[in-house]
Image (cartoon, rainbow, N blue to C red):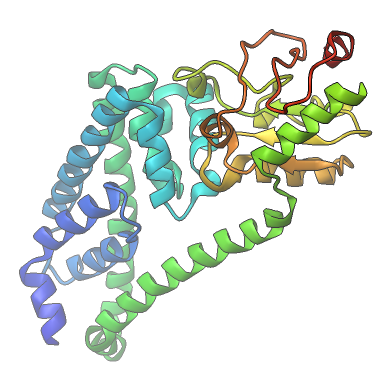
Length: 341
């Protein structure tokens, strides 16, 4: 048996525990190839599948409980940090919050199978106020389903490989190389996927300064202001429920139903709280497919606008809000200001 496999067999449970713990803490190192490898070796009884499952479950419990507590304590800031660490930020906040809204704690049963959802499911559960005992039951159940799925898949592959001694001998000699190639390939695929997505929308974004200038100009010349859409999830309102001047709240999953009410004759500005404006960019592409072409994500989203010191206002349901004092030195005409409603 090659030295690398011998080392893995001798320390299999510690390696599984540490690898899964590191991945679940947010470091993008895929553990699925390792689970498959452990399952394959269990076919030769060199690795005990039950002990491997226990090692994985304990690692998940420690990491997920820590993120649950941090999400409960710090809320949105922790979630944004995790999304920046994740290589699946396009599915990160918006999809996970949407799943929690529709399915509640049942989301935890399958979250680890979905890239991005696994990263932020625990802190969003904490932020949403889910009871810890309820969280622990569903999270451990989901971790058990996830680990057993890939360990049994590896075990099945190992049982098949044992029937051919030649193939099993080849697998024993090159298992480490195959494992490393699987890990590297998995990481490269995710990086390329995210970069392709961001490249498609990079040219569409506008800076907060540009949007503020557009709002000022609308006030000064009495024209219709840009149509601003707040895409944030209700959980994102908790730290700061205010919105950009004139913004209307429409969830990403509801945008298609509101397509007819979105104007075609002026710029439509989208903002969210996702790093690199992933949700806004995704919705922009969806609106393009619906024939609404003048759509632009706001660079930096809500936090970028707030950090720049531009005005935020209380939300008025069902109405575009009147713009408060603009940042430009020009005086405001009250008559033209009322046209923003």
